[in-house]
Length: 228
Image 1 (cartoon, rainbow, N blue to C red):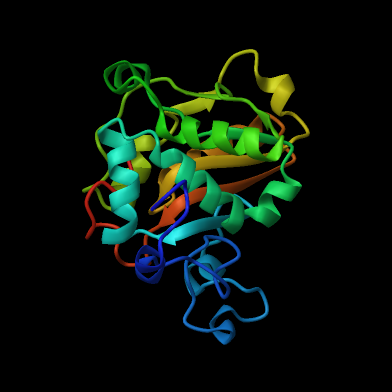
Image 2 (image 1 turned 45 degrees about the vertical axis):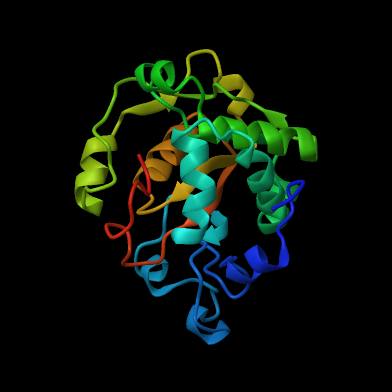
């Protein structure tokens, strides 16, 4: 990779998520017919997510982990520039509709240890690139949680329930807004669902999701550190 662009070899390895993909959760679909008239996967047809729509730049695999995990855990914050470029491509339609960008929050104890929130880095880059208002502290985690990576979908929901709320005093900046929630990885959607519920309760007009990578359905517990 050079200057935020992919060399031809890297480009060939990258599993970008392109059409057809589920309109609701952003997962790749084997073919357009698999989405039906609603353009959604079977899981989302049976149990629609709380948010309106989601997009991801890449499938979450060995290749995309080489970008995301160093950014997340090893201070390779320069990788955010590359990911912002790809997020702008993958989420162009959602970015055109958004009036405010809000990153998934990190609890203050983890933020103190890591010194930065990778979701906030991505949201900040998108804000600068697209000229969309950034509300970096719109959401807050009021209590820490166990790492979610090895928990089942049900266990994640129980662990994260009611832990993320709209920060006091930010309600008026969220009310009536088309919110685009930004994160690094979307796995089961437990964290995104709690964030969405809090934003809608605060009066958000709509909530969409934009992430750097999306796990394939059924792979949520088979990849390292997919979501915290």
